[in-house]
Image (cartoon, rainbow, N blue to C red; front, side, top):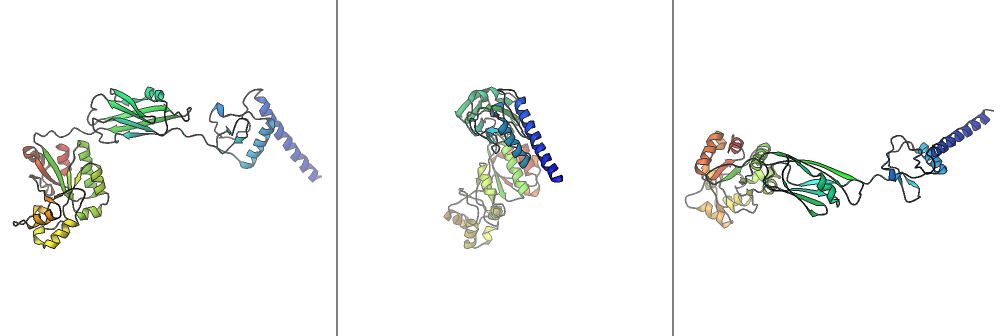
Length: 351
């Protein structure tokens, strides 16, 4: 008797299940899109992605969902009149990046360049492109995936600009990309009546060096760096970073010794193990040279010429920033700083 009751109960559940599914199908009405048996949380991409399901198909899908549990894939047809594909995800929207300028320290004469991952519908991009604060300029397409905005006048110094764009791709016409970017222009360059060249010797902490680079970039300045070979070995990132920022990198020996005290072979070794990055300038540590020209001769035999300085800021000894700036403004020429100077960054910011 108990076995018979279990069979009847099982049959009754199947009947209720079938009636429920048929009811869902018919409730849509003839000629409507029936989205039957979609689990909670399932994502419908668009109305065009829906498929008309027969009662038999709906029942099969419902039974399949009961076995598999909730899913979070898109409901899309595999083909016209074909079976449903529960594993396919929505096509991705196009990507967009700010290819130029760099986020910080952009030159005031910069252009704004946006690169998309696929060809775009030009009108949608052109109608939505905005820059704030507003600036006049001309928007042009370099190619189907790159749009360039050229300002009609230089941008303001030390100002943050917001760039916004919305566009429709031509590959997936119903998918839009949204881009929001920001960049900051460099500060006003120094106003000095006499020309000058900034140089930086030796080494420093990573924080000190990166701060100097940041200030130089903010003022739009380039310099000549004379790091030791030991500094190069300590910071493998240093030389590539300096070169990438547009600075010159020249020789200052390997270990910063007093060269006149060394043998000729030792002097040659110090120079050869120093930094070599496409620069033929050599600065002897402490500016120490011998009267007979031995060191200059060894450097020349290795392809270098001596480069000293016109203004010694003595920043390593704690010279105040305003005093260093006054020295530079009064004389100009080649200025000696160090990557470990006490008030060097302050002097650069005030220059």
